[in-house]
Image (tube, rainbow over all chains, first blue to last red; front, side, top):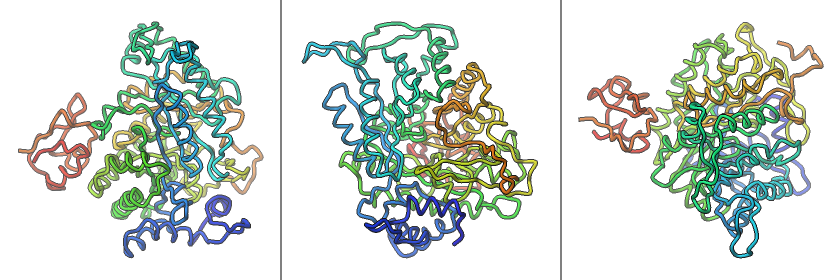
Length: 506
Length: 57
């Protein structure tokens, strides 16, 4: 099988099995064979799974590639754990988080049920220290676990916009290193967004007592969110009412949190396993091969559904909640490069319409194949697996015509784009923010989990540009939104290459 | 009679994706049946694909 240099280097560093002395003991082909065998129920499935993976047409999330058929056997990428308003609950969940991260999973939490800072603590006659202080404890624990060095410890911390500590939360990542293992998002309600529009106030409610303690101007709070996101990339927003309105398993409860990158809203103790189809491999000459796409979707859905039964869950509560709703998330990667191959610029109506058409096709095909799966589709960021498949990540546009990517362990990878369709090449920073949001909304229409998408803004963008992105995302019924202004984080994952290496010029 | 239970429907649109002649999304984002059948799929198949089992055939 053919793999790029980048793919090989990532696989050798993090995916291929090693012996006790650290020597690699399997080939990339062997890895796909191991995963196919572990997930398949019979010979014909095993053959089909191996084929779509080894041809790089479909790849499951990293924990499946790393752990399938090994003693660990934990195959899911996404988890959400509950935090109740007691020390017992806070530290039980901290322990569960540690076990999940050790197995390569990412964890999301809502801190909204915790009583605010300075609130009464009856048992000790003291005062509470509040959600942000406990997030720091979680962050420190993640630092220590470091997931065995194979996957970065990733957390999502969510606080309701109605929580009395919301202002402290919004600014909690302002200082360089603070909460470095967390993405943070504000869970905003329809009520809040209406108050923004009507220049009205909205209420802060103490979750312990259920009583309103204060009123804030909604527009001021959105301003602060925008300013902090402009400065650091955090917080993002999740539109929690839209999430719950469209949650297929809503009879089991209310969703309060998502996984680390926001693409999978989950109930407490649910996990979800993801996989992505490489759209670059779904082309036949200059058009989309719909028959091949249909066949690939069917095999992929079977794969992801099997994973639920083959998975070794870190704690029994997760096994139970996951098997109850059987959520899976099939998505795509290589979308931007597929557009380029078809000669379509990302920032056009044509691209948005095609994106919607592809996702609608995948969704209805996946739904017909699914077996009692409450959700079937998700657009994941595909950070590592897109390197293995050597394609652009998720539905993101190309970051730059030439760029280097820092991956875990300090490997610097150069991305090379080779195409005849140069007129269709357009990069994330050249694309107007409204096109980023429109594309996200187009995919969201046919995705029953959510869409991971970062709206990239140029360094010179204003705070108000961030705010406009947030408001547009809500208007277009996205489930969440993240922005990133170039250069606003000290350490960023993608850099535009400035050394001007001629071999990577397109 | 094909019908969509409005209380259960979450407006995911899978029925519209499968049979756009039969199903449309109303102004409040829920699906509604406006015909009895389409060429692409049987109504039983659409009902099975609905994630919240809101389609009655």
